[in-house]
Every structure is written in C-alpha cells, then in structure tokens.
Image (cartoon, rainbow, N blue to C red):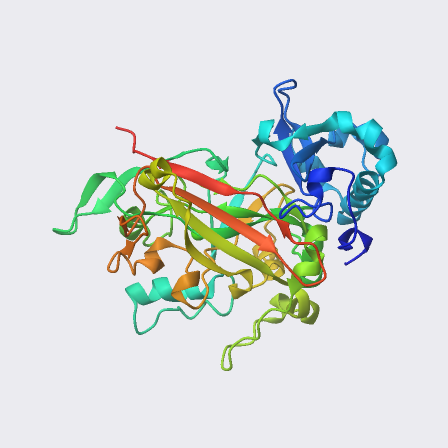
Length: 429
Ligand code: CA
C-alpha cells in the first residue's frame, strides 16, 4: 500500500536524513538500542544518522499503548495487527517531517554511531528455507550433475528448523566451528576446525501477528503476518554438512552462528519496491492452490539489490576497501515470502510474533551474483584470486563478510537495511 509516507519529496527536520542512502524519512525501520547514558535496551527508529527513542516519547504516540513501546524487544509491537504499525508509521512520519516538533523531539534523538544495537526480538523460533533456485541448482549440480533439483523443489518451499539461540547481531565475531568431517582416506571422520567455512547471502522474514496452532494462513492473508525484512548470513561449514546431513538434514554445520542486520525494515516501507514474481519457466509445474494467489504473483517479489563484500585481515591492515564478491537481485527467489509463510503454517504449525524465517541463499543466474563461496569457487575447485593477490576457496580466519541490501525504484527514495557483517575468529582449541 503506497501512500504519502513514500513521497520522494518528503523531508525531515533531522538533517542527516536528507538523501540518506539507507534511512531517509521514507524508511523508518524499527530496532532495539541502548546508549551509554541509558543502558536499558529499548525501541528506536532509525532516521538518518540518528535513532529516535520511541520509549521516551511513548506517551505522545496515540496509536500504540505506551507499555508496548517501552518493551526491551519488538515482540509485543509485532504481535499487533499490521494496521496499528501502519498508523504508528504515519504518526512518526508526521512528527519527523513537521519541523515544529524539533524542539520537543530533538532531546530523544541519539547518534547511531554511539548507540549499541541489540537483537530486535526475542526470537522464539528460526526456520531456514531454500528458495534461491540458482543456489539450489548450483549446489545440486555439485552432487547430482544430471538431476540438480529434486522432484519436490518446484512444488513446495523446502525448509528446515534452525536454531534461534545462536542468532547474533551484525558485528559480533563468528567463532569457526569444530566438528566432524569425512576423512579423505575413507568413511571415517576427523574432528577439528571446519576447513570449508562459508557464508550464505539470505534475507530474514520477521513474523508479525502469529497464527493459532492448528490454523493455517491463507496465501491471500500471508502479507499481514509479515512485519518486515532484514539481512541474514547463514554461516555454513560445508565439510561438516557433507558428512552429517543425511538422512535428517542440516544440523551442527549450520547452527553455530547466524548473523542478522539490526533493523526491521517494515513491509509498509517496502511497499513501493514489491514487484511481480518472475514467471515460472515453461514446463514448471503449477503449484497447488493453497500456494497460489494472483495478487501475490503480481506484486509479492522483493525488488532489492543484494551485495556481498569480503575484507581479509591483510586488506584491513593495508587499508584496502572491501572486495565485492557478488551483486544480485532478491527476485531470484523461486517462491515469494508469502508462499514461504503460508507453506510453513499449512500443516497448522503456529508462527509467533518475532519469529525469524530465512529465505535460503539467494544466488542469481550468473557467477557475479552467486551468494556463497561454495558456488563462487565451485566447491573449492576454482579458487578466487582477490585483488590483494590472496586466494580463497572458503573463508580464512580474519576474513570479514558484509551483506548489504538496497531498495531502489525510479520516483522513490532509496532505502537500505544497515549492515550485516562479522569477522571469522579461529576455532576454540
Ligand atoms: Ca541457508
């Protein structure tokens, strides 16, 4: 639903918001922050280089009860109907665009660079999907060249249950996992630091209003259960994965750490950037009716540009800029976010406000848009040579991976997601 809050001509009295590449007044993402003066985590909204403290102005926001805006997580806010968050967005937009509010609100603006950001929600459950068809196809080819996609892939969004406890905010270092990998000398394992540590470029879907156990979510209603989007890096130990994953699927190769970006970019902010889901290739099966909605197909794909950058320890020491490993489009997802949510709840599984769903690695059709090193290095067979002269098949200790996303459309202000980055630390001894 596009409205006046998306007007490209709108400006805020917060000077740094003007032309801000990520957080102009048209974005207004929610997050949790604390400050040196007040270490209590609380709800804030990013505006330019600042964060507006919603807990401090909760009693003057009429659409949401003050006790919801003074919580240390977004869960209670996300559990409210989407219409309430839209009304809150409208009021925040009015407050931040009308300069007469500056004297009253300026005391509640905090410098983002001095603030400490926290996980946006108390994440009850985390599920990871596999809807990047080029990724699924590239990975499948490495194992089954003649049959890369299994028969179920085009009938349902493949997923598995992940681990919520190890989800961390951007900036927290990732400890290389130890684990079992298959010996090159036979069917027996070696234990030690992963030799094939990788990243996965994904988006995270934040669940808003939940569904009761036993009550599925109709595809036409899925949108109101999606509160917003973040960036997600599903760090993966490919050698551990290859040895452990059969017959039950990913386990320790995936659950040691997941990094997300700090801001929940709302569905309301993303409205102008929703686009038509690319037509299914000729010959692909028609999904079952519960997964199919004409409105969703016409405007349910995310029009985002996604990017992955690598900085090695040597590059950092030499002051070299991050090296871009890939750039691609989120519309490379085979299933929409509504189809993901609907499928997840189709058996009656209850989703709760603040749950997180990963899309799966989003790779484009060409190598410059591949979303993992497993694909970029063809399983380690064709290592990358970086501009620094360093060679990479998988991640080395000291490497930093950063994910970025940007929503761009002619006639609308570009909005961003903040950063999703982390550095790799050596394994525990
Ligand atoms: Ca994944």
